[in-house]
View 1 (cartoon, rainbow over the protein chains, first blue to last red):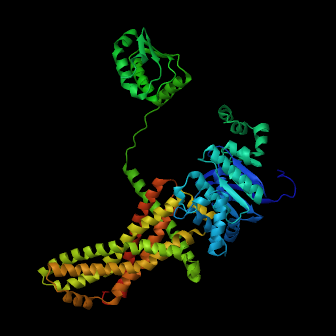
View 2 (cartoon, each protein chain N blue to C red):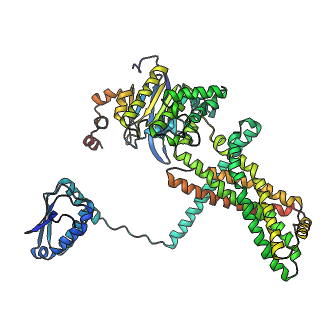
Length: 260
Length: 377
């Protein structure tokens, strides 16, 4: 993936982002670009600020400092800008975050109803086809709480894809899933990326996932409050001289202790 | 008793064989107790762990405690042959043992005042943010009044049924019982002075001015305010609120205003129902216990009440509806964390809504004195 090739436009850009929870600084001076069509994976140990960074990318919290640009417009410049950006994004949360009082189908229909003028019948058909893409057409009328965790995540993915987004965000897609289900979800993400050209941003710490799908990896560290490494997964594993990166990719506890 | 060969004492050496777990602590205690005498006599003790792959922390604590007693009495104790796991365990025990015991804090007068101050400050903070929240809801609501199509009517109808229609049984029974008790007790007292003819007026005023609206508000706060807080709180925990937000939904528009509009629609009628029930309860009490003919009750009531008495209560209920719906939703939105936080938010929602309703009622009563003819002094 020639993500650094000139002319490749960043679809999402973070400039000098600083932020955290309450008074506690988590991220400081973050700069990153998400290139159109790539699969970018944000990795790091638990508590390093991966999810926090995701919250900022999604505009769920306002940065203390810095800007987040979606297609060259600052998402915080006006309420409309954030709103417009959000209709072009799809997000799947760690838990799936499906509305518990709606069926899977109704969950997928929700964004379609909100943002399109399609008649109800067409919305239903589109939602069905999205559920079919993730292999859940047979469970369309189930309540989210009646299906397994993996299914909830896939339904969340179907909902995220409902409006054919330009960028898909995933928060820990493999958390709480067995290796096989997790691998099939990775496969699905890769298919969507290659067939629809959807840009994908994933937060995870699952090594298998990282190697299976990433075009580019960014590693965060808790003490650095920011990015400590960037490159392809293989580059980070084989060429990095940073102890923390080596420890993470080698699952090496002793190295991790040394680097602290 | 577990496997007795696990501990062997010979010479100066207490050797441990195999794994010791917490179900064996009685055995360990007894064993050390049995050999206490000889250990004291020997003046030294070697703990030999070379035969043990690891021991449970509870078992280690028992051994550690006994060894401490021995060394206090002058016995030299040392460990030998222990794997790093066991060694670390004893080191950890020693570390925490040598740490000074946390001082028990006694509450001084100073602390009590500090505590009160903190709580008051916290309450003030909450009320301030709630004010902001209501402001934002009202902003969203005003926007909807201009474009009524933006109101999510299916949700409004759903909440009208949940909070209004389904509240009808309780809101017709409780005020009715209260009206009956009130009628009986007041009538009984008044009869002493031969003033029982004023009982219907008393019931009419107290029910329509205060008890009807207030009881309806308290019941709705308990039924629906808590439900709103729990619903939104759970959605918050399950990341559903974030999901709605990133899908570009206006949270107020989707989660808060439908509840408020529903309560605005049903509250006045619930108050009307509570009024009817309360007054009817008074009538029953009059007929059953005070030999008060129903026709007299009604005509006395008709002489006392004027339309504004009832209308004012319904008007007050609109304020209550705004307060209850917003407080419930606000508390739900503030949930961070897990299931316990939802429970706390639910409690806080009920307590704070009732508190707000009573404050609002007190203020509105001051106004009422000036509005209703025949009340101002």
